Length: 426
Image (cartoon, rainbow, N blue to C red; front, side, top):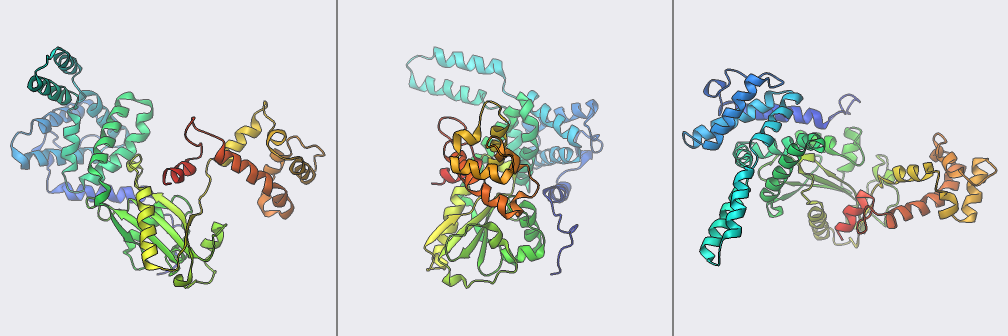
């Protein structure tokens, strides 16, 4: 393989999504035909009202399932093709119709609740009314989503649909309810027992290596040289795959096999560093774990992946004694910036030692301890200046320890998202 140019290296999630949309259209082309549905052609990109009305009727036809299984699949494929043909405005309108007009019938729910409340001691009658209540609480849109899931690549379609829905649901209660329904369905279909652990190597298909580059969320991959280094003999990369998304990695973990616990990720990513014989390594450093699909957020399998990989590595390399993570702390800078900007709080006086405050004041050249930390952190490229870096090292480590241990999102959970992930993994 040749080295990537900078432009060639820009393999993004968006470019992969465009390719997925094309593949879905092709997969459903033979199953659906606009002439067989209520659309005379692809609907207008922004889903104008005349096409929106045809969409409503087609959704109802899907729910009524007239004409047998083949016709039902064709109608579902038509719905999927219609969605893929729309622009962002049209897709949002499509989902709003699905969310608002195919929600639960609240009158039917109220009636079912009254029936349960009025049921006497007869166990058979109570079971009947409770079953009717459960059925009334299931919105019709769930059946539509299940029909879309049954299409070829339908599972991936719904995962990508939820990824887009997440951004729209923040300010729209109806879309938020639809998003929760979809999460519930995906969770029920996503038994971790079905997940397949695969190792990614330099000999893996180029399409998979492209996805590894695009989905890397912790330490961006800069080119083929960087990628090859991460897949060398003293490195391991694993991903989970699901049978319904066989070519799509769901979550990817990268591991370095080293001697002793590493304290700097740059040394692990150094392409010029000598390659270590993995069989003499005594430590496995998990330095990157990336969820490949935002549409699967809220479905936790990172914990399961790490434990599976630990078992895999321990089986392959008997010399490994230590398993550790080298993780970023993404919220620390934002937290510290807020604290330093708070006029009611003096970070240096409250949390740093007298020796640290004096060292900061000396390095800042301000002659006063107050605000020295903020002044130094605003210095361009301070980490590249040895004297400043030395003065800041211990104060920042002390503050970071406080951030990780003391700062809470609520009374039970730590503030930092990466810390929450690792603590949840035990």
